[in-house]
Length: 104
Image 1 (tube, one colour):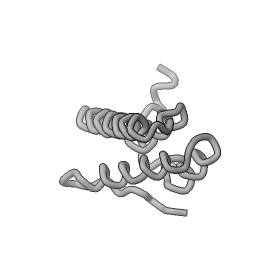
Image 2 (image 1 turned 60 degrees about the vertical axis):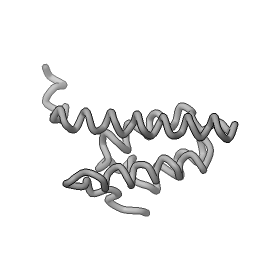
Image 3 (image 1 turned 90 degrees about the vertical axis):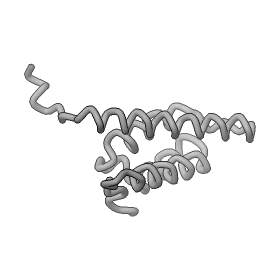
Image 4 (image 1 turned 180 degrees about the vertical axis):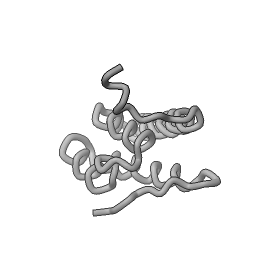
């Protein structure tokens, strides 16, 4: 139980919303990848999806870190698409999540 003191608690609604956002984002990237025949579903997007939809207040989930980091590791267009989906996702609920906390 020693490490449990540092684990954040999440409501079931937050877990379901994060799962749904990640599912929609990865599905959109997969469909666009299949349509364009350009690989957009790569490993860095899995990690970015976890950050963007599961922990949007993290410094690593902010646009600067997400886009620049993925630009070095994967394709720029996928990073921008994933960011656009996260911006839309966090503005849709009745009580929108403040995302991003900063752009640069």
